[in-house]
Amino acid sequence: MSGAREAILGRIRAARGEAPPPQVPRDYRPAGEHPPGAPELLDLLEDRLVDYRATVIRAVAADLPAVVGQALAGILPAGGTVIVPPGLPFAVEQSTVDDGTAGPHDLDGHAAVVTACAAAAAETGTIALDGSAGQGRRAISLVPDRHVCVVRAEQVVQTVPELIGRLDPTRPITLISGPSATSDIELQRVEGVHGPRTLVVVLVT
Image (cartoon, rainbow, N blue to C red; front, side, top):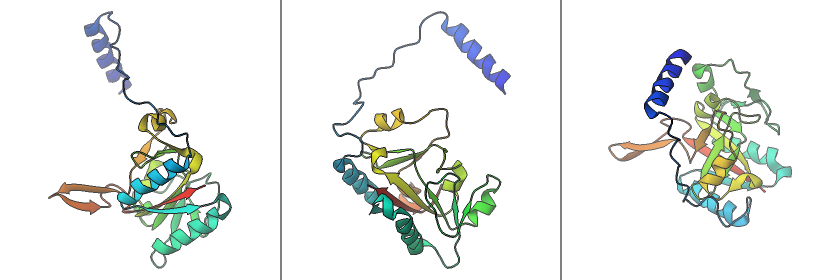
């Protein structure tokens, strides 16, 4: 596969000759007027997420384990199990830590997942996961039907360029804007098509 890739790129380079690559216009707004974690951004992020039909819970760091436990109690079915990624910086009672071996069918047996995040953009209500400690591999945040995501105030920026600037492009990035949903089927909103149908965001100040 790598040989084919190099062959294609080589043909593109040969066709272009020695001309330098074109300059990409950067006339968009790179940053907002509020610093990361500003109260205005937290309010805006909550407004966007609620508009997308997510649930937002405010919490202080000291109460985080209890708040996450209460959030799970409100969405878990009877006997439902929870999976968490390795490196989550707080404990989740009666959860299973993902060891990377469970396949989609096994992950579907868990009713919920709890993760941290890498960053969030308030203007679009977008949360980014990059697979690092506390976030885990992409499958665990996409297969279980309920996702509790912890976002810390200092991770919230205003614009998408600021969000992208905080991410490592070599990592597996997942962007979440509310529960998984589509309106492509006869213009009727259908939730849970490509990921969890229930998203609870715990916003930690």
